[in-house]
Image 1 (tube, helix red, strand yellow):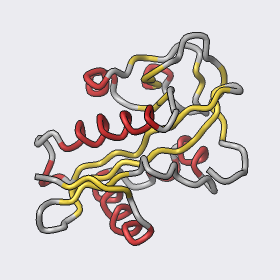
Image 2 (image 1 turned 90 degrees about the horizontal axis):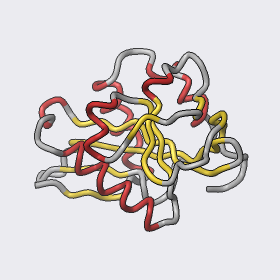
Image 3 (image 1 turned 90 degrees about the vertical axis):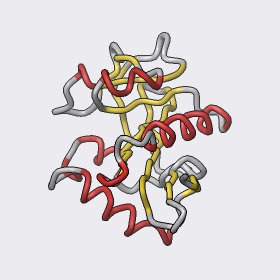
Length: 161
């Protein structure tokens, strides 16, 4: 059993260590990180999952971006500790946080990822949504209200989120 809760400032380094464990070296060189630099995570959506002993088992973060002039959320990273993978925790983090996003008025979520994995959570390939290079357009996926939304994905304006 896992307890999902909002990520706090005290969780920051533990979550970063989980991401370092789960992702290849140089993860912060990816173009999606340029969209996150200097932008606050969205309060209430960046979650951690802890087991009954309080050990961090998973984490997910969200960042505000613009697609053209339209606001959207950039999901990622999401990670589950290797010893906890295959237990449905990643799905629980995604489903819970995307549901919370809708409750908070965020109706568009995008990510860069593997369509076969994320389609089970309602994500589909986005046509006309352009992540900064060198992102593979086949991996740009979206959930929510994307009809008529297209353009370059850009950083959120410098203002509190």
